[in-house]
Structure formats: C-alpha cells, structure tokens
Length: 53
Length: 158
Length: 246
Image (tube, rainbow over all chains, first blue to last red):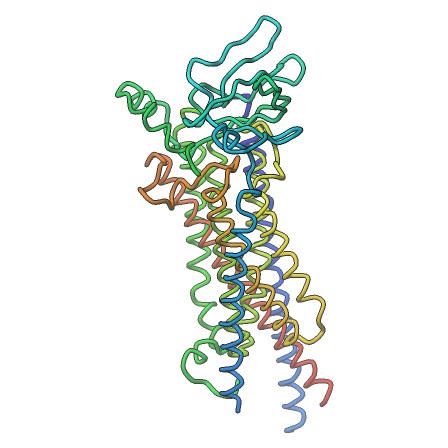
C-alpha cells in the first residue's frame, strides 16, 4: 500500500494547487475591480458636485 | 425587426445543432471499429487476417492460466469467452506486470501475434473494472461465490 | 439595459450583483464545510479498495473533477446559446467565465487520472484510448474557447465567435460519456451513472458525493466572483469613457 502513497499525495497536491489558485485569482480580480469601480464613482460624484456648486 | 432577427438566430442555432448531431452520428458509424484500444480474442477470430505488426490484445486473464518460468517469462491466456489467445511476456526484459494484473481480471497486452498463434507481448497493462468495494465486502462476496459471477459481464462489452 | 421583461429582469447586472453578493457568503461557507468533510471522508473515514488498496483515494478527486469538467462545459454552451440568441451581455459574461474554471477541472481530472493510471494500469497515458483522447480534446476546446475571446477587440464579436465554438464542441460531451461503452477502452466503464445502479460500495459512494457537492459549491462561488468582477470591470470601462468625455 505504502508503495503507491506518493501517487495519492501527488493527486491531492495537484488539487490543492489548482483549486485554491483559481479561487484566489478570481477573488483578487473581484476585489480590484470593485475598488476601481468605487474610486471612479466617487470621482464622478465629486465632479458632479463641483459642477452643481 | 429585432424580434425577427432573434428568431433567425434561434433557428440558426437549432439548425446548427441538428446538423452537428447528424455529423456526429455519421462520424460515429464511420469511425466505428477504428477507435478501439485493443482487439479481444473474439475480434481477432472475426478478422480475415490478424493485424500485422504490433497491436493491443485485451480481455480477461483466464483463470488458472498464469504460469511463471524460472527465467522470468510470464505465460497466461487472454480470453473473452468467445475465444482465447496464449500470451508470453518476458519480465526480465520488459519489467514486471502492474500490481492489478491477476487471474480473472482484465488486461491489455501490446505485442505481436506469432504464426503459431502465440502472442508475444512487450508490454502488459492491467485493466480495472467498474467495481469498487472494501476488502471485507470482496471477501464476503467471494465466500458467497458471487465474486466470480459478478466479474464476468464487465469485460464483455461489444 | 433598455427593456426588462421576462427572464431578462433577473439578468440585470445591478440586480445580479446585489443578489450574488447576498448568496456568496453562503456558497463560500458551504464550499469550505463540504471540502473539510469530503477530505476527511476521502482520506481517513473511507476504506481501501479490495484491489486498488489506498490508491482508490485518487478517485474522490478524479471523478468529481471529470464530472464537473463535463457539467461546466454544458453550462458554458447553454449560456453561449442564450447569449447568442438573445444578445444578452450577462449570458456572454457567464459563459466566458465558466471557461477557466472548467479548464481547471479538466486539467485536474487529467492529472489525477494519470497519477492513478501509472500505478494501476501501468501507464501514465495511452493515445489510442477513446476516453483519454476525447477528454484531452475537451481540454483543448476550453483553451480554444478562452483564446478566441482574446482574438477579438469587440466583446460582442468575441462572444459570437466563442459561442459558436462552444456549441460545436458540445458534440464531444456524449462522445466522452459513451466512449467507454461504444469502444474497447483501457478506461473502465461508468460506475455511478449506469443502467442497473452504481457498482461502488456505499462506504465509498458517500464520500464521493460529498466531494462532488464540494466541487459544485466551489464552482458556484468562483463563477459568481468572476461574473461580478467582469460586470464591475465593464462598468469601470464605461465610467472611464464618461470621465474622458467630461
């Protein structure tokens, strides 16, 4: 049994690499996009307030 | 106008998918027997001449057929119920067979058919069937004599 | 969004972002809980196999990954069809963001399958096998789909071209599923979704289903993150244009 343990651990290592990397990349992308969107919206609001005033 | 274009696109998708399905069915029948990983002994018997050169021979390792020579030569018979072919495999030269290789289980041998009807293998792969069970369940089935019976249908796919 | 009627109402990007923000914490929690339970069941609580021994544990990754690879592709093609017919940007975005996740599942299924095949079959890969080859084609379909999106500058054109590829590639799905029945393959036949019921002992079937649940919850979570990200990115681009004009 022990002879094949390396294959089992390698498979779980592959999953432990692929799935979290994909999730983390997607989450960071979302964070960045939401931050940029909020900053831009704040800018536009400020511009609009200046225009009104 | 927009409605009409949408319907057009819908029709296009439906037509495309049906043509694709039709092409798939045609391709399936055209490819048919060429998409085989191995010939079973029964397939070989149906051929007018066995494939020339190296090919894959697959089926069940016949019960009681495995014999090991002193010089590490492994003898066994591949069967599919319809026919069987004796196989020789030189473990000293080509390496040990996989752990899963066993009598009554599936195997695929790669090599050449000699004129005397013996298959000389250079490589032996083990096949696994669709059954997964813990050792206790396997032991219980074996005790009840269901192990052997349950083993057969899996390998007799067309 | 101009007209909001029928299902289009639910596909409104703002509404979608609000709704997804509300359910995401739950799907994320579900993913973590199911993976914790699934890994415990797969690595500790499930028995070794009578023939494969401990190597059977690879199955708890390989089978869910392979199922998800097929499921995500079908979903991608359905979204593509909806985007193609109704020209709805959110459907295009959903299809586009299915692809990297599906490609990840496909890669995982290929790698874990290879790691199982080496000790069990005695080979990492066999080119002549219909199941292995058709599954590799699935991986290339995902890559081709992703690449096609990059080719076009205009997202609408890209969506249309990619959607056509996605729908044509659909033909590969039944080929993958039935390959083990239609042809002689090294790969074993189906064990779970087959006529006559599963041929996996229940002590192994439950861990498998929990892992499948974990993969499903993971997919929903990551897909929602990606769609929200792309919706926000498109909004950023629109705002930047507004700013440039002002």
